Length: 381
Image (cartoon, rainbow, N blue to C red):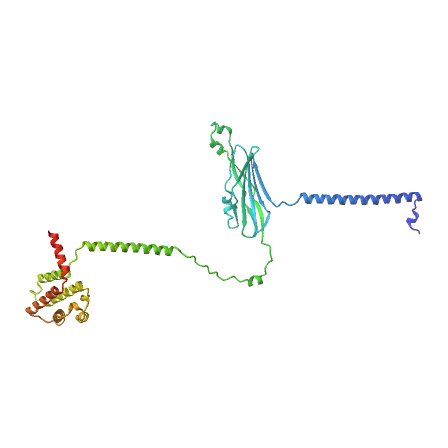
C-alpha cells in the first residue's frame, strides 16, 4: 500500500505557487517578529525611563486657597546619613495662615529618642502671582537603623474678608472659621551603615580602650580669691596699726615708778597688815616690784623665778652694786614668807616695804618722770 502523500499530488504549476506562498509567509512572519521585538524594546525603554523611582517622598494636602506640601529626601538613608525635610506652604493673598513650629510639635516629641529634627536657616517667603509661599527646611538625623514614620505637617488658616480691613466685620469671626490642613505621614527605611558585618568571635575580640585621663583645667578662681584675701587682710592690718598708733598717742602712758607708787598706796589701803595677812601682803609686794621691773626694764620678771631673775640680771649694769644686793635680800625675804610660811615681825615687814619703795625710787627713769611732771604742770596752768 503506498503512501498517502504519494497519492495526493498537485499539478506542477500549482506546486510552484505553493512554494512561493510559503516563502512570502515566512518573510512576513520574520518581519512581523522583528517589528514586535523592536516595538517591545521601545516600550520597555520608555517605561524604564518614565517610570524611574523618585528619590524624594512627597505628601501634599490642599484645602481651598491653601496647599501644604511635605517632602523628604532621600527615600532611603543609612543611619550615618542625614535626610532633608522640606515643608512648603502656598496660600492666596488675603489668607491668614498659622504654621506651628514643626520641630516642637507634640508628635515629634514622642519620637525624640528615635530621630531628631532640626531647622536649617530661616524660613523663606516669596510672593508671586497673587500667591504667597513659605518654605521651611529641616535636617533629620536617625539614631538607629529600622523603619520610621515622620509625623504629618499641619497648619491652620482662615480667609480674611475684605470687610475686616474696612471695619465692617469682626476679626474674631475669621478666627472662628479657621480650618486645619494636614498632610499624611512619611515612612522611611533607615539602613545600617555599610561595611563588613562582624562575627560574634570578632566582636568578642574587640577591646574597649582604657580610661583617658583628662587634665584638669587650671582654676583661676583660687589664686584670685587668695590674692583678694591677702589684700583685704593687709588693709585690715594697716588700719589696725594706724588706729593703735593713734590710740597710743592719745593715751597718757603712766611711768613705771608712778604705777608702782600707786600700787603701793592701794596695797596699804587694803589693811592686810592690820589683819595679819602677811603671806598675801608679801605676794602683793613681790608682784608690784616684778611688774615695775617689767615696765621699767622690759624684762619678763612676773614669769621668772627668783633664781632665773637673778641669773638674768647678774651681768646687767642697771642692777649692779647696792641695787643688786638690796634686790636679792628683798626676794629672799619674800620667798621665806610665801613658800616657807615664815611669820615676819612688824619691823621685818616695814623693812621689806621700805626696800621695795627705795628700789623703785633708785631705778626710776629720771628724765621721763620730769618731763611728765612738767607736762602735767603745764596742763594745770
